[in-house]
Image (cartoon, rainbow, N blue to C red; front, side):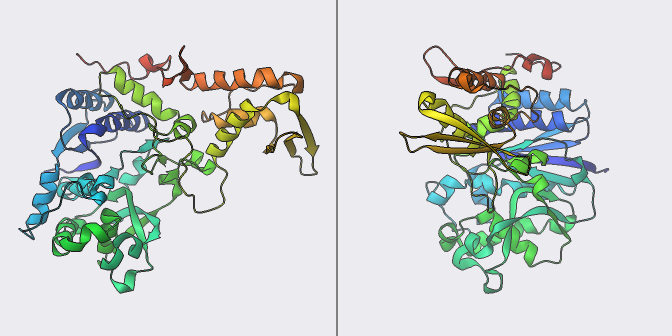
Length: 420
């Protein structure tokens, strides 16, 4: 039997089906006609969502793509562990499982399909592709992944072998499974859980990453470490050049964090396409406004600029003066200074308009405005609101905030039709 060359595996619980539909549209827009098969690991997607996903792959995949749904319930997860420990039992309400559900282990289902697909790329459900990643289907390696910042001892607790306590783990947000040499990892994962079941769900804070890392560290494998290009942080300016943005963090997703949503409005284009096709919606609401994942370094964050823009809108301009200073490095320093309030806001930019435009990032600045000091009080709030409308964020009459359709949505994936 001839193997598929390039497959992608995605996974989500049934209440997150919308993320998979959105990601399918995103992937097939950025990598058209090149993916041979999609494996969708799920635990109860409704029939309508499944049918829409099938049609997305059929139409956007150029007719050559295949889609395979893989059932993976909590009971399936438990059954795999019970193969090695029949007495295994874990309460579904365990705090660890409420944060990292059984679906965290769904990525390892890719190992079952290496007999039929040469390279399988696993992607977390909270990712956004900015450009194609088809090059990951190439390369001479057994596995490709990103090296994380947490140590193995942080991921495994007391279960970590002493020789690996300070070793940095391998992240599992994106994994390229590329060799039959990995297939034994599947049994290794569930056997380890079975053998340490009394302590595993209290010690292993990053269970899937820990076991993935431990297997790589204890087996002679050819590992290719992916760079930031494939693991862009939502708050890094340099992530504009990445191929993938990863919105990790429970309350830092594209769909539940207002600032993340504003900074990466591209995700909402694909999400609204999914809704237009009849796919299930996200109903969880906004969970956070300012939460930003730790960057691990000195970075300039979009979220800071968004927060500052909101602060500027609230400043009573009649009490402030805009002081412009020029240094010898051809930079302008704009300082809002007030005598009656403690606000002291500094903005380093070539001009005030680039500062405002960059907070509502749209890949490239396509418009610019010069704001006169005397007009700043009246013009800036309207300018920001208009820019927010341009990326799909508006206020309705009762001042509730909601996302609305982009004007060009109907033309993006016009070939996809779905019957109600």
